[in-house]
Image 1: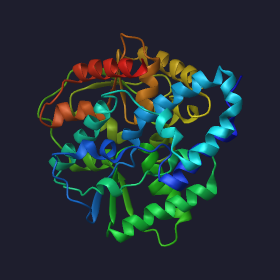
Image 2: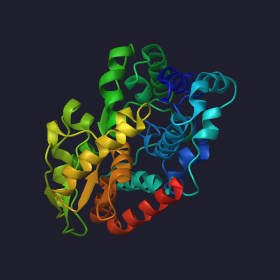
Image 3: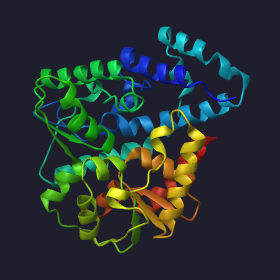
Length: 340
């Protein structure tokens, strides 16, 4: 039995409408990454995570639940689950990552904040006030709910005097740079990916890395935002040899992530196809999107390391905190524990 699409989309839209995110994250889990960094609360320039990295363990947990539900007779009662979720957060019980499931993604965000500091920036952060961008609900076509949420996010920026937003992932960047201006009256925020900021800063590496890596372009960065040269320049300056897989740059192949919420098995098939393309280019893969990261890791064999670009950049440009190969081993071990 397949999982009903309507109740699934409805549950995510209801969460965004009533709880501010497609999957509610405890405030401590959403802001834990910033502890000890001393980031100011707000300001004209803010680092905006949109909770994308923090959401990944919850999305992955939800996907596994959906796979189990789709194979059972309980799937026919999905509509009741959505109705109950409007009253009490059923999704919080369903999408619960295991202990330590978000540690790797916290590290990615800390990497980004430290790298921006090396570039001479000390952006603020909205901490518990920060809202999810609404990207998944936009992708699922729930336009009314998304438009209202976009205005809510913009109103928050206006109240806090934010003029410049530095984003950490392609989905959030695309929402704020391209989609929000079409929907929100008076929208005049300056939106930049942290990769653009770092590439423009001309940072010099503190150590040179010598690995060969296959770079997986994000669909949104490459096709919609034209952001392809910046990650290659940053990795090349760090000493890495970038090997281009089949389908790269504007012609990149999808990781399978956009359909994971509705068709987790099809998403995995797409990820396996992309993994095969990447491993023919190099034994190490670099991603620049948390959704790509988790989907490709799920499909990758043990001998293929899949690492977020922030880990490589932090190792080359910032104080060394974790060698990328060791980071990847720890991350994969954590995800295996989480999968169980």
